Length: 253
Image (cartoon, rainbow, N blue to C red; front, top):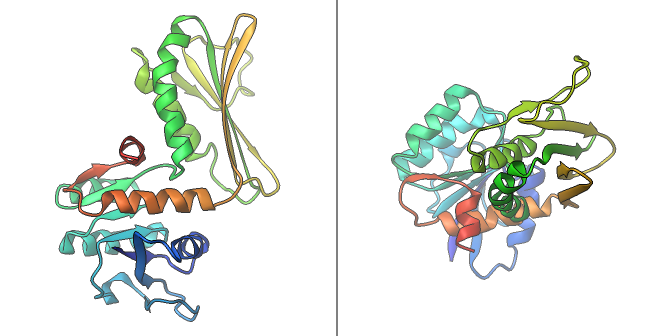
């Protein structure tokens, strides 16, 4: 049984993962960390990671960027693998995480969905073939009206996956309204839409002469991110020090 510390256990994703792990035969949450300790849980909850002395195999983090520094210090000191799902970290924090990966296994990904990460692998393979054939590349992402960043980290990750497969990287075009010029050939257009309660939708279009090929992923609930994080934790527990991402999970699924 893999023992998990849920960092940010009383947030939205923490509650989702807590529910998903109930009755799981392979993994269980043995402790949680959250400043809001009054919420009832089936495991002990500590206000900070430094207060948690419970033995565990891996940490799943869905807290805040402000809590990442203490988390990385904790995991590095105990050689405890961590699935890092928090976003919005500074360049200094990212550098610290990279440094810590020399001593402990860290898995960080722009999107925890298994489907999105499989799509990234597909795009890396097909992009050079379609680009060579003269197809233009556009990405459209849609999210709920409370999301403040645009474009989404996932849209940028999809663009990065496309560029990974290309011999010469394409530039990213985020806004066409400021210039009245024709589209450049070697660019990836990325457009963001915000409205309602859309969990997440990403569409990648390869537009050629008289034909369009579309790859689309739709998230209908946050549960897909929780399932991916759990699968990542099961993969990461016991791995040697290093920096991992969800592509490693997909390859070992």
